[in-house]
Amino acid sequence: MWQTLPLWPARASTLADRTDALMIFMLVVTGFFTLMIFTLIFIFAVKFRRARNPVATQIEGSNTLEATWTLIPFGIFLIMFVWGASIYMTWAQPPPGAEDIFVVGKQWMWKFEHPEGQREIDQLHVPLGRAIRLTMISQDVIHSMFLPEFRVKQDVLPGRYTTAWFQTTKPGHYHLFCTQYCGTMHAGMIGEVVVMEPASYQAWLSGGNAEGSLASTGQKLFQQLGCTTCHRFDTQGRGPNLVGVYGKPVLLDDGSTVTVDDSYIRESILNPGAKVVAGFKPIMPTFQGIVNEEQLLSLLAYIRSLSQPEQREPVSNRPAVPAHPAPSPARSR
Image (cartoon, rainbow, N blue to C red; front, side, top):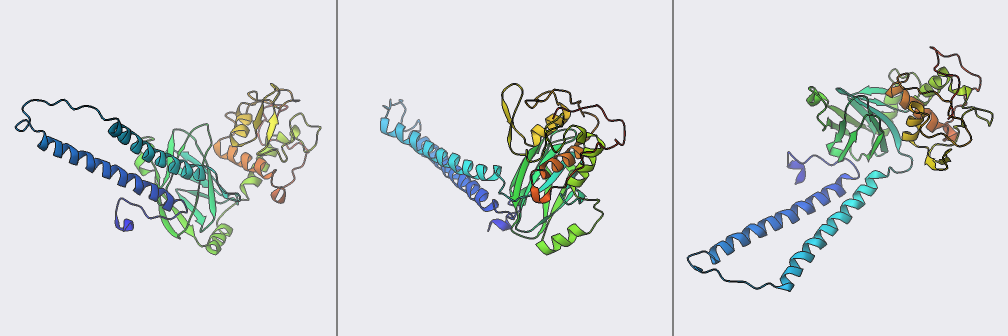
């Protein structure tokens, strides 16, 4: 029945049914109480109209009645909260093994980068039945990724990574919108998600003009920027060894700890003096203005790959010759 409503998008992800069930429950509860309130107002207006009650009658309070209209709504709101929190906790934690796809939002387009190196604009190809994790960032202003058929909506912010995930249940073409007004061409910032059968998806990945995986692109950039000079794969570097550190806590020079995640890596590249790893000097220069958001994502993919032994691609510790003047002699992390 719901599929025939033009304002109710199709359900094409594993979370869509749960999200719709909560939405329908809230609509039923809201509709019931709205109807009840208007019905009572009408009944009281007729029963206690001025012609039948020319003199106002004092009505004494009722503790039972007050407790009833307090506890029942409280119980209903508590159900909504627990139900919604359960869905949110599921949505906020991508399942292990989810396929990573990086997203850069900019006025006025969506750019997607697959780990295998495929790049797309305003179109995203994904395999059917596999969890997809989107790591997103904006190059300019605030955008918002909205995939109505998957019940996914997540703001895309400048200077901060946000994530969203979904697992498709039906092949086909689905809408992709920006729901945050981001400029005069905001309405044109649309696209589509193409859900393909796994075999077709693999054939699509093997085609095109991919120039190597995103991690390999990051590895090349890592070498071009001279990062291998300090971030050696041994204990002799002037910066920390990055092998196996992603997702793990590290001790900082101020005694605190921080988890090596996407945000920390980004901050370490653009503002290296903010959180210096214990045992190393703050000698790393900033790469602000030297690498763009897409290059940052490739570096992030490469550092992530260093924590996945089966995908690790060894990098020579021999300093590479920078493609252009490198910003500094040494790095602290």
